[in-house]
Image (cartoon, rainbow, N blue to C red; front, top):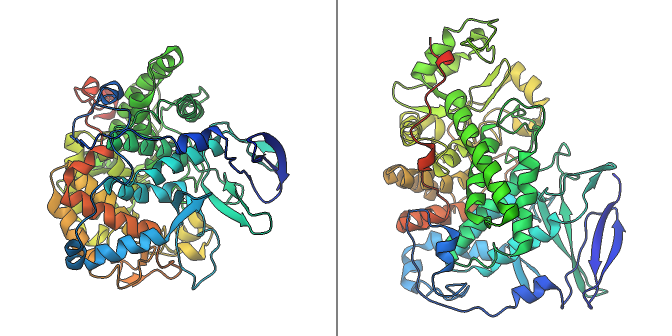
Amino acid sequence: MSPVHGDHTGQNGNVRSLETTVGTLFEIGEDSDVMRLLDRPRQVNVERKRSFDERSISELSNIGSPCRRSCFLGSPRPSSYYESHPMVADAWETLRRSVVHFRGQPVGTLAAVDHSVEELNYDQVFVRDFVPSALAFLMNREDEIVKNFLLKTLRLQSWEKIVDQFKLGEGVMPASFKVLHDPVRNFETITADFGESAIGRVAPVDSGFWWIILLRAYTKSTGDTSLSEMPECQNGIRLILSLCLSEGFDTFPTLLCADGCCMIDRRMGVYGYPIEIQALFFMALRCALLLLKQDNVGKEFVERITDRLHALSYHMRSYFWLDLKQLNDIYRYKTEEYSHTAVNKFNVMPDSLPDWVFDFMPSRGGYFIGNVSPARMDFRWFCLGNCVAILSSLATPEQASAIMDLIESRWEELVGEMPLKICYPAIESHEWKIVTGCDPKNIRWSYHNGGSWPVLLWLLTAACIKTGRPQIARRAIELAESRLSKDSWPEYYDGKLGRYMGKQARKFQTWSIAGYLVAKMMLEDPSHLGMISLEEDKQMKPLVKRSASWSS
């Protein structure tokens, strides 16, 4: 791997070039702009208002002072609460042990704190993994760690990223970073991984989207618009969007991705246009609309975002959506059709329909399938993509309700004894060999291949609250509470029903802990949903119906 160029900042705040083969290193000086921002005194207004409606940034900025609350102003829960909720107390204690500090400032949480096995990269702060931790801290009125995280990753984004002599796009966010302490020189540096150390050497497409989504969650929760309005943050948003909105050869508004570019970071056949990335892309675009300033540069991006959102929502709702009627239509497709009158636009072969999907599809219900590309439809269910589709309102209210109907109808398959299946069904036998390359970690009903991931509990709970089905979330949380803490908070579970602790699962997995806390707090106070949910865009109404060429 070629050396990665980074920055090293001395105590006087001046930057000098540094070259290292270990990774991207930096140190923030005492006089740096970021440190001054972190130390900036905050004006406080203890008033805390939340609502499910989408308030604009300009409206938020008119509420009292720039920051409506201090990061630790929230009144702690009484000890009696934790005495009656010992699992919640255990979760908070374990989550706090995972907090990472850089020069005395909390900047994130470790992926896992399991010292019984080799750490590998679980001793790093992952962007996607930190999101549920960040939400838990925001809900508990501990904002400082979230703000610091956003600033640290923003600083990392600005550096040159080279993998094997190839320069990555300027807007790429890191997959993870690690704080290193030099006891001899008594200073700390940070190493960042932009994909050069990841399995398969794939850049994390989802990191930038999660960063924008978290920035909006921070702004919504705190009322502090000063962070998002910083020129550096505005530029960071635009750099991420520039990577996604650039014109190319694609005839689809969806994003073309490599395998392993998201939560499923190993080869699992999600290359092409995976639902997880498309849903996150849609949500990040909508969040960016709320965060970008309406100046000359911002207006140009707003126009591009708006056009893309309309095209993306039409494409996803038309071609990724599957219910009983659409399944029957695909079953009856003709092939080798030409011209704009073609019914089977992607030339999907009806014989490629897997046998399991006919039994899996209930009479009431539906979902966004895993992938759609020329002559290929991946009919697998992916939890994260469908939940984010609900939260971002990519799914219409009717589609969101149908997704929840599907979860209720197929509870044993998608939830089983431990929530929640990352995808369904598992691939096995010859197909497993071809799709995963005989990956021993992704054997059937394990890890990314149909494993059960407790972290997904927070996404399910948010989707349940938004669709008015809190009883589904309550049932899933009760299932998790029966084992999670006793099993030392595993990363994932194995088996068709999620009965067994994962073969290679880390214990004390931070996002399993944070996911539970977020789900629990959201169910207790549904107003928390506002920071991670977007109401339907009325400009996209009425629902764009399926193209006439798709109906027989």
